[in-house]
Image: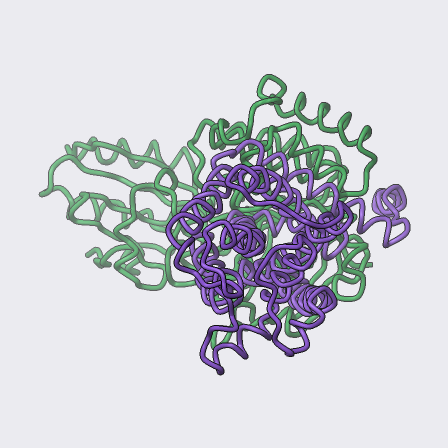
Length: 347
Length: 281
């Protein structure tokens, strides 16, 4: 039996652009799938096809057990959609917005009003219920938009970049709301450019690029594909780089001299893949100390989803935000597949 | 998947026509609330026709030959049907801009993802515009009475004229809906909704006696759907300047106006709903 959201070979072209080039998805009931990819990868188009807003050129889509192409109206009764742009009427109050959506879900006016009050309470908007949405902050509008998608407690939810453009505090808040929601058993498909967000909220992650799903799995599975942990050292003195790099290379996973240790000269940073965890880290620190190499920073790093994306696609996820990632934005220009820095073979 | 089937059952659709009416009214209410909260739009919508009444009647009145008379009083009575008709057609721009804004803001996406009647978003908008048009007409009629416009027929005929005007305005808002769904920004919908209205309303019998036009222009004016409504109003108000042309719409203006309006609604509603269903933002 296919999952609550199922897509097979979805293709959609706009003129010459092949926005979707055979998207396959399967989201089991009650789980969260994070659709991760850069701008223009096909995330929004996928959501639009699955929510009956767009008719795919070919392929199959089933949502909540209903064929999206053959029973669009029945699908609409079973889904909630929260968009990239907070789609609320800014001249209506929070309550009027939710009541209208409820009525358009075919609820009676009275029931719709009661449900609106409930949601306003739940989303901490009760105080602002009778103010027009125009006066709301960005975070409040997103919450109202999300509440609108939840009016009938649909079994299947779609959220298209729910936190894009929000400040970290509001994003954190919205994450809590989403977590609460999925703990109640809702199936959710969430698109995001934020690798951290997918890591945080999704059971499974599908990485999309150029209209295709290029990898799917749990966050851990995807990270494993990129390789295991690595040690990063930032030395204090530029002249120590060479010595430190030779020292670190001894501990590299495949043994010394295999060219696995990388150096970023301008940042005085040396990285090598290792296996051995904290114990090994302590040993390296002692060794560096013995050789009189002063360090600014040392750490054991597990691969981030950023690394995953890079190793899968050969380019960094081009997120619109500025507060995720680890300061290695310059890597975007390097362009090498899986290599963020000029490689320097240790001797 | 019991949760799924339950949700479907609790919101099973009823009678599709009843649903369509209900949904349209919900959307109309929403648009009326908006209009009430942005009164500038309604007020500017009123200033323009009032300005036309004053400017046309005092500037042009006295130099216009209406049925052999150049009296300003005669022109003022002649003019009013034209201004009323032009005013109702200007609702096109409002409908177009409103729908374009909904597209732009992503609201159309939200509506399209809801289990609501297909044409209801557009019908709701055009109905709200109809209410606004009626209010504008009411204010305008008072201003017209103040500057000396009078009707010389029965109450029923006068009401009939206003009904024809509202129907014409309603038909034109469907043209606005198509424009609103076709352009990329609300600003484009406003100007796109207005520019073509100037030739339509001026190449007509609204402000001058079309009998005095050069023959080719006169034919266009006489068959212009807009002229039929103006002619019908003059006839129903008992105002001067009723064209004596033997063109069919001038001879049977009430029928012509009705037929034109119904045709416009049928054609542009079909187009608009089709565009709405495949709308991409």
